[in-house]
Image 1 (cartoon, rainbow, N blue to C red):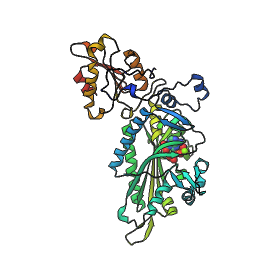
Image 2: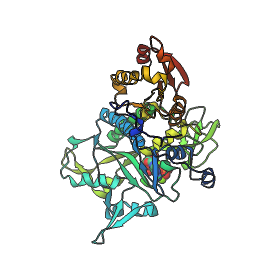
Image 3: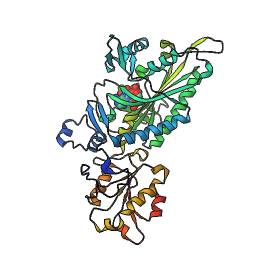
Length: 442
Ligand code: ATP
Ligand code: MG
Ligand code: MG
Ligand code: MG
């Protein structure tokens, strides 16, 4: 890997997305450090550090570098699209929540030492929010006279959450600061709340289907969150910290937080299996635990003030990214879900001084411009302009970082009708294509 070799070439200056423009400090993690830290370094963590996607700032907190931000923003965009479809509205709640709110719901105790707290100059204690049920309930409570006509209401945000985890590890998988997309639903009664719950769960199914990594929806435990019903979304992986029990007879999944059993709690069959998994999302039908404690009420038709029925729905955005990489990657080669790769296509132009360079270097700009016309590839194509390096070396790097498609402007482009070599990483195929076939393939 030689991502440091970044002498800018005089060619391709009209192309914005050039590899030499990217801040991608690679990070070699010595083998013995990996061995010593085996417990805390997972494959996705190591690859993301080595390939300049993230960099550690403190235990359990990370800098997102430009390629990581691109992937993250694609995920946020995908989530926003699905949220729009169910009429959820985006907000940003403050990181600081007054501890008195947490006292009223009893969670100051329940969350215990996982809470990060800060004191202001007036000796007031604030929580660096690990989740926002208190904050959002207080927001609704502060709006007086909300009428039943204003519900259902769904508010969501994607913000940093803070938890002083006992064992921050595996990079983004268990951070002490991490990105969560959290949604809160408010309804006038249990039946409507149940409807909102189903609607949001369907939307989360869509989100996970579009990401494309096989996911498993399991009955979850309500834990300190409270409520009557909860589901978790999981990716199966060896390093997962949850155990799922699954029934091959009825397809039922549950987190063993519910207690181990040798029978399916749904159909009583003993065809059950246990697998380790990473929790990537969690939904709760909360009831009125928070609305009652914090007086998040509405006025019903008879002008009586009634506590709202709530739901809470979290997606571990930064964890999803790392978990997807954990599931899809090989030891030395990173793989991304197609829709989340920082760039979808990387173009490798000829080596500097080669006979190809003299004759066909202009094809790079041509292919780049052509592909840019496809809406889903706009601003999604990168040119590896480290032309001092051989095409072969750059192809190895492209594989390692895991760009889904590599297009080589090489010797076959010297034919009267240029032939482009296209590597499709997901299908593990190399194809020789004419320009028009290239467009059709992508
Ligand atoms: P875990 O069981 O892994 O500790 P949790 O059940 O405490 O997670 P929730 O309170 O349900 O987490 O939060 C919603 C989502 O936030 C989780 O499903 C997960 O995807 C993500 N998440 C929770 N804790 C972390 C963390 N420390 N780092 C990264 N993501 C996290
Ligand atoms: Mg936890
Ligand atoms: Mg959990
Ligand atoms: Mg959970």
